[in-house]
Image 1 (cartoon, rainbow, N blue to C red):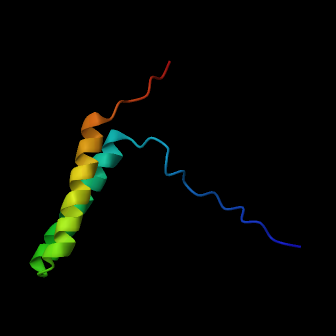
Image 2: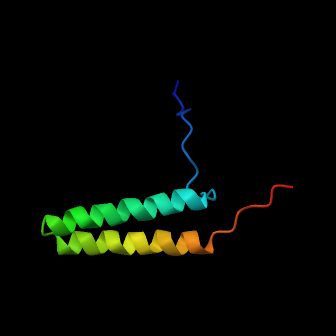
Length: 67
């Protein structure tokens, strides 16, 4: 008998909140700053690009109607 995985995983496609997106933006900026201070320019650029993605996503975010 095969055991099925019954754990619930968060759906990656669900709409996040604007606050959550801005939190991810700040998180990636902090990661980038740490990598710059460690001399990892390539890693820092990766985090800067991720931060920009979350910033743009937050700017475009529309709160769902709650009627």
